[in-house]
Amino acid sequence: MLGERLDSWLRGHQSLVDVLIALLFAGCCVLFGLFVRAEAAYFLFSLLLALPLALRRRNTVVCATVVLGVAGVQWLTIRDGVGALPADLAVPPAVHAAAAYGPRRAGGAALAAGLLGAVLGGLSWPMLPSSAAAHLLVGAFLASTVVAAWATGTLRRVRLSHSRQQARLAVLAERERIAREMHDIVAHSLAVVIAQADGGRYAATPEAGRSALVTIGDCARKALGDLRRMIGVLRDGPA
Image 1: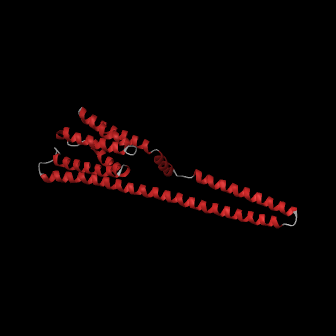
Image 2 (image 1 turned 180 degrees about the vertical axis):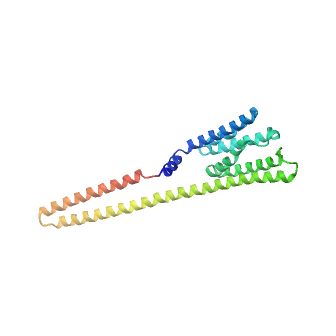
Image 3 (image 1 turned 90 degrees about the horizontal axis):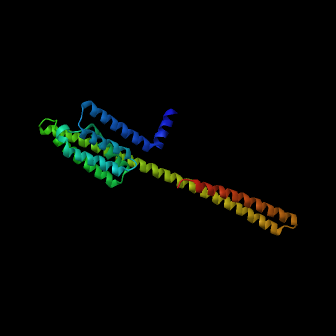
């Protein structure tokens, strides 16, 4: 029960969860920088890489663009000293978000940019031995993380699309059921009205005619109430 409530709360507050995760990630990067007495550039790049993750679902394109762009600027400026920052771990989530929640072109662009950064980062990593094999191995590992992030993001997109399609089909099925019920109500009511009207027309006594009219009125009012209920369900249902 508690797990279901927590899952429901997380699903209902996804934007807040993203913000909290981004703040926690940024805080960890800052604490690490304080521990190793990093320079100011470290803190600047760390915050610029970590904080955009708060937008990974609300504004996916901005998140991926900022994270990948800052990672590229970092590679051009401070790679000779440190190689990579802990905040560079923001790149795979940004690629995942672009593939899962952004336009299809955004996912492809994020994959291409991530792979380019992984290859360049592996080839130019300053703390590795001078052998080409070591640089290629690191580049391949970094590229594999980017591809894995893109693949899981694409799978997430497919699952979300399937869920939305199933929801639409459920709505259509419910509306079709209601339409059949409305047809049955109208058909039954009209059959009763016609039968009573014919009976009243051929009735020999005024009392029989009045009884037929009463039955017609009751049937019409019941049918009207049922139709209003059905129309209310259609109006209040999901679009």
